[in-house]
Image (tube, rainbow, N blue to C red; front, side, top):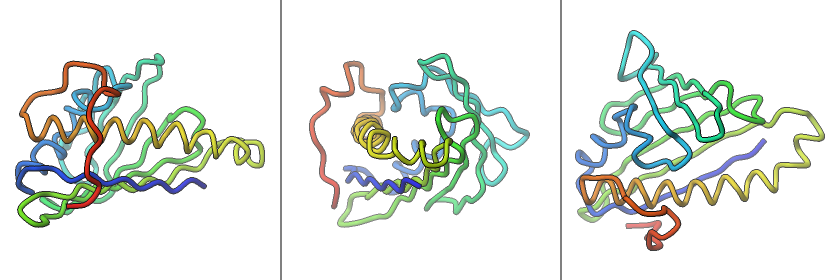
Length: 162
């Protein structure tokens, strides 16, 4: 089981940050591997909301929200995630010193039992890199009101505390 955590300090209010983060269809604006994201359930926000994401590797995943604390946090589970038996992600926003700290915590269980566990270090490294790029891109989107137009890897490093 992989447990990953990332944080980024955003130069914006908690409300403005939450508005961007809680829009479940805009993930393609700040996660490089997501081509499109669409709300597919009967609920578009909150518990039981679902979205389908088309990824660059021609994989389609589904995510379902299992917890939602309006203005503060949410948790969703991912289905059909490549190499994953299960995937869960929690996002939290917290006002700190006039800024907002975004925290993401993921739990990923790989398929394949012992063989899957052997791949954990590699998957962890790849996931941390993708996560850092996504956090930098999310920070840019919140602070500038528009998606970053270059390569995410060219975004500057960011503060992980406020």
